[in-house]
Length: 513
Picture: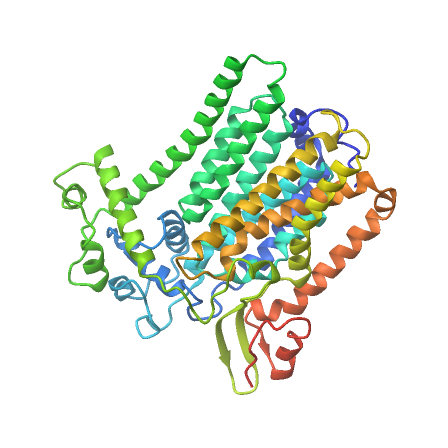
């Protein structure tokens, strides 16, 4: 757990270590198993909509019918939800066509006996993939299977992730792609000045995929910018300027090109899936029809083939719809919160509750208290360690020692976290924001934690001496906190008193008698 493997070679050997390390694959299988229990069991419950599911049920039906449509978010997450429903197809014996006639489905439109397992399948699967990727990310940082397994619990046993990712909502997809982007970034950064086209292409593609779920993931492109700037700065003293410029242009082209390529590919698939003209007799069709350009109309009417100009015009139409929807978004809401409140876990949301008269089952967006305290401390601890290293340097950190790579990673990920918060503080001036908009920031804070831990262990012998008990204690606290709040995430019935116990440390739920 003290990084014994990290000094045996450069990052280029990480793949060989993973392939030959049986403990790594056993740990990865364990993460997959635990995540499957948390994110994939009993997806049909509760038998009613959870938060924005009422919007995504309708888009799923239109995809099933092959009807063209616009939505408030880019189409990738919506298509993945629809693909999961098509794969499981639990409602084959029910007439679900009324769901696609509006942009929002209230309880009266949802047919009796409708199963939500299909629309919730893909988010659950991507949550499991996200947990596995996060473990790989922790291993890339720590080079220790056991330490990576401990820190991977931050994702697997995050209560807020459980609530959000078990529902037919978009965040599981975006967080999984964000984890891939961070993994590519960390491995590429550890390669120092050596180019890694596959990793840079992976970083750009993951950013593009995350943006095609929700556009706020555009902040992830800063990772690519910082990666290029670091390599340029490292070669500034000994590499000709012209060569540095060419290298920077090449790497920027790879990242930007792969990002744009996957975005175009996703939108092209969206157009191929929805080839039927919007139904002007429905509310949804009337809304979408207002934004159809002539070229896109002709494509849907079968008089023009799919071409780059059709893709460009249809994408422009989609963006206009999103802009109009953004303008119509309210500035405040009873469940809203501000970015500065998010790290404190203020703004928990009750998605639904069901009572039998004695006990009430909740679906509550509430986090793991231990996780969120650690995530709150991580950016401040990272900054403090960096200032301390500047004011009172510890052992010298050359380029072949782990700390020589770790500290730049700490700086860059801290900058990324600050950029994320700044962007969302800006967005919060124009639209209502909710606690789940913090999830990318939360994942960044989780990624800072092992870097902080290892940096502290390098600086203070006492931390190195007690790191095993510390990690064991962290795991125990994290699991206890998860179990304590889990009834609110898994829709488990609670009495009023049992519910109020969950407010012991911080008010997170309005209990119902």
